[in-house]
Amino acid sequence: MQPLFLRLLRGSLAIAAFGAALPALAQTMGAAAPGFTPPDARAIPDSEFGKAVRKGQDIFLKTGKYAGRYVGNNMNCASCHMDAGRRSDASPLWAAYVLYPAYRAKNGHVNTLAERLQGCFQYSMNGAKPAAGDETIVALEAYMFWMAQGAPTGVKLEGQGFKRLPPAARKADYTRGQQVFQKNCILCHGADGQGQSVQGHMVFPALWGDDSYNWGAGMHSVSTAAAFIKANMPLGKGNTLTDQEAWDVAYFMNAHERPQDPRFDGSVEETRKQFHDASDLYGQTIDGKVLGSGSTPPGGSLRAK
Ligand code: HEC
Ligand code: HEC
Image (tube, rainbow, N blue to C red; front, side, top):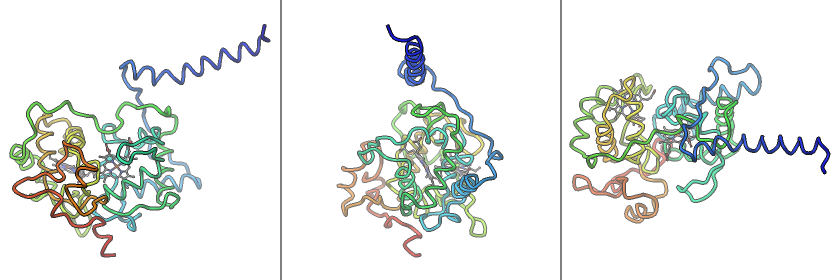
């Protein structure tokens, strides 16, 4: 017979272990993912740690200004991770923080959060990777950690990532997408998807072309873009397009040239085979042109610096 305290201890450990397994269990059983609300932005502490958090927030909101050495386009992290990385269904930071380290099929190994962030600079920002211990990465991690305080780790929270749409009822179509674009997007993103700047400051980000994300970025996938657009665009009117309109306009947007995939090995066909799947448009022929064959090298404005 074991002493009582040992039995009690074992009992409470078992309960703790069961409790920790509950969210994951609930998810495998198809129950709703747990929700989470990040702390108010005004609650960032006045401390050395708080300084790093604030710096991460600055970088996230004005990436070219505060981390320009690593940025090759005119975007900010918050151009896609809306509301300073807080908004559900726009890949919020609090939901991302608790999912790393994680295996990623994109590069076939377990990625630390630092490596995940490096990828954002290299692909979405068409720039260059900061070193893992660089103050840019440390500040972004501090901002994410602060925002996720109190959230359970290893759990997919409600609102994580971009909410996937059901498969398109009709195959996504360029011409229909163009019509959706002309009706709903030009006002801000420009007739040629080039975005708009006022006195050198980007107000509306580019959707394609040299100042946009490159062919290796998550947003170049039509299904990811459709999910983002459905929930978040037109700005302030998320969830007003039909699913079909979101699929069509995502297809149209990603059927345009953008900076080269940084993993390009000299052949669009080979790069497509190695790194792209059947549903994305890199290497496909649209309007008689092979997408990716007219791309400028990755790195954008960094190459001129
Ligand atoms: C052009 C849009 C875009 C920009 C700009 C962008 N991201 Fe992302 N980000 C995405 C997409 C799309 C994904 C999801 C990728 C996927 O599903 O493959 C993502 C994923 C992430 C993730 C992982 C989310 C998760 O839940 O696993 C983090 C963290 C992240 N981005 C941080 C950043 C940071 C930091 C910056 C700025 C340096 C940035 N992103 C810039 C589009 C963008
Ligand atoms: C009222 C202005 C407005 C309209 C209309 C609008 N957008 Fe946006 N869009 C923005 C802003 C601003 C951002 C950057 C997010 C932010 O700063 O909060 C953005 C970001 C984006 C992004 C991610 C960043 C990038 O440039 O890749 C995509 C993709 C996008 N919009 C697509 C669309 C599509 C497609 C439509 C039409 C269905 C559309 N937008 C309509 C203002 C607008």
